[in-house]
Amino acid sequence: MSSTLPNTSFLSISKSEKYTIVHQQLLGLLNGETDPIANLGNAMAVLKQVFSWWWVGLYRVDGEELCLGPFQGPVACTRIAYGRGVCGSAWKQAQTLIVPNVHEFPGHIACSAESQSEIVVPIFKNEQVIAVLDVDSEHLDQFDAEDARELELFCASLVPYL
Ligand code: SME
Image (cartoon, rainbow, N blue to C red):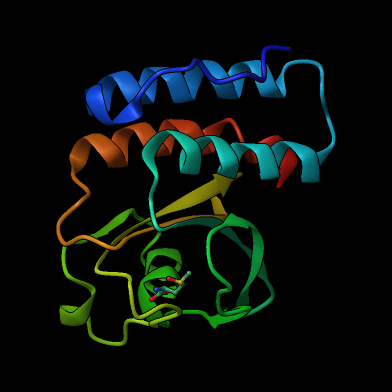
């Protein structure tokens, strides 16, 4: 298993190059390890380390709520109801939501005052949403269709551990 990230300044490379590194690293981390906590924790760490986003984490479906899972960043809300906030809305709509300015999203749940933009990616198993990946940035308008596509791909690899 290759768990060491290359000694690169991630500031100087393009977003698509960052995703290439992220996918390679995830593959290396998951290879030969089956423990869900180890794998999900490291998966969140890879995203945080390569992109330096403000907050990166998983919420898992638990009945009518999402419950906080492995994450990297400041303390966050533990439970989010179905249809509430960006996370609960992405779950309800069963689609990736990109929010360029969280202050303009009705019902946005501010776990941190620093968060300015957000992307939430639902994760499916047998066509049901079983979790969401939530990424927050302290800058406005940080996420686009490339992030949606790449993070959906990233999330698909996490299904066996959720
Ligand atoms: N902002 C999210 C809540 C989770 S925190 O950002 C980590 C939402 O509106 O669902």
